[in-house]
Image 1 (cartoon, rainbow, N blue to C red):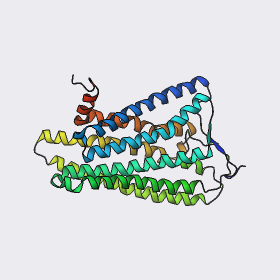
Image 2: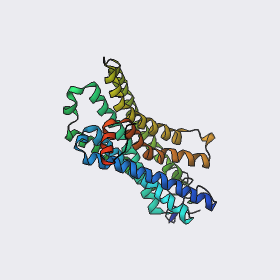
Image 3: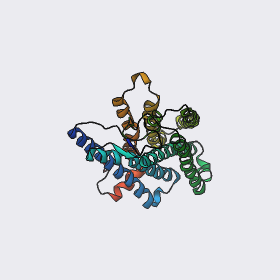
Image 4: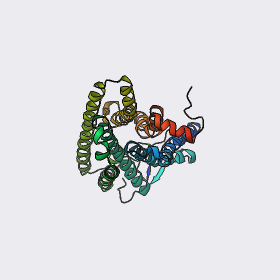
Length: 310
């Protein structure tokens, strides 16, 4: 058996051994990747160029689009390249970088979504203090904290995972390098260190989840007390996209990591991994652009005919 010092590359799980299906996988991933690039790119450029969108909510949305672009660019291009060239290889360094950037961007996105729930809470429940509680400086600090927390989380997990001796071969049962699959290659009980680190991180993520839930409980209570039905609809319109993105993010991630091992299989793991790593970055721009009137108006100015009223 090889150990971690002699491993120079890993073998990723292919979607299919048939050449035609490999090319189909390439085309599907290319379409999804281009949709993610286009959608997130439009959101980034529109928010950056339109001064009417220089508010805390859109500042956080711009950061979310950047994280989505980074996350999907970490996994999908390599998978497409492998399908096109009919190979499974990824270098050891490439696998380390893929794990680091994927965890970094996904963790930062979760912390950012938590921050965005605080933004919606302040906007709806404490509107008179909105500019004070979420000034430009505070927004920068909150966004920087989300990125920094993601970076530190990823650094700890990546360093700990790849410090373990690996002696169960170099075949990763996933289409990209991820920590649970790397741990399966370990032959040392020291992998329990990473398990405990995952438990601690899960507890932290659960606290963020509780914060999001409490924020939305307060938001819904405030909305239901609004006398104007039009005001209720407008408020819900600003909250529903964020709530939808959070739900998509948590549901796909939970299915991927919390599903019973008794129903686990390479094919199912592959499908579930696509749901939580590829689909959200491509779908998030669509969710925000369909429900947000200000963003739709700004996009329609930049793209004539876009979101034109029927």
